Image 1 (tube, one colour):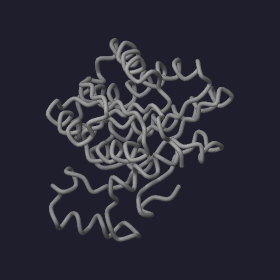
Image 2: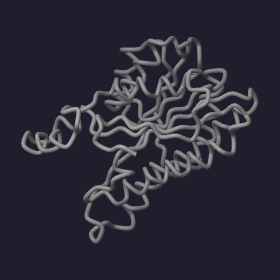
Image 3: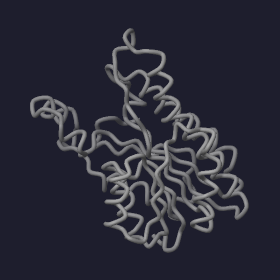
Image 4: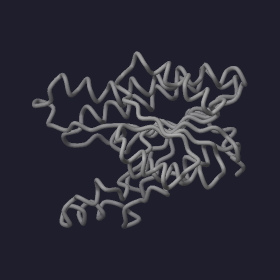
Length: 243
């Protein structure tokens, strides 16, 4: 798997999975631009990986996404690989879910992914090469209590990615998804032990996944080893959901 000197843009780089993505692609010798909204976490990431470029950017600022992608493209001297990992949750039962929180989750999780892909592909078309990996979620396939907005946004990413893959396959641009199950992060660490035990009981492998499990899969899809894989979703969930 040779990814040395490939130019990689990673959104949502400051979370548990995002940190693993930066570490994995750094180990593989890539040139990385990492983005997020938490300035302190971005600085910590920079301290751990001095060679990366960090950019604070809010993905709901849709009118600025084109300029943001242009800026990253100039800083990296191109974009070979785009990893859309950023996302938010604003959970509530559907009848209590406000239209504002419905729109906010779809705006950041789905619409921003569309716009990031749109403007990155314009750069990739010039060299007839590109890899896009959109990080979705098991919830986009199974649904989940209190997460109608999140599930809809993640399911939308899968369908959108399939359409995009058809449009640009002949241009040597591959678009795929990785769908994590329940991954060991700061968020899952806060789950009470009783519920965590119940959750793990539903996973055939009997344990939570790690950020590295996800980043390994993303790295494979970003490499030329996945040349003939396009429009697919690879599930990383220990067997909890099988499509």
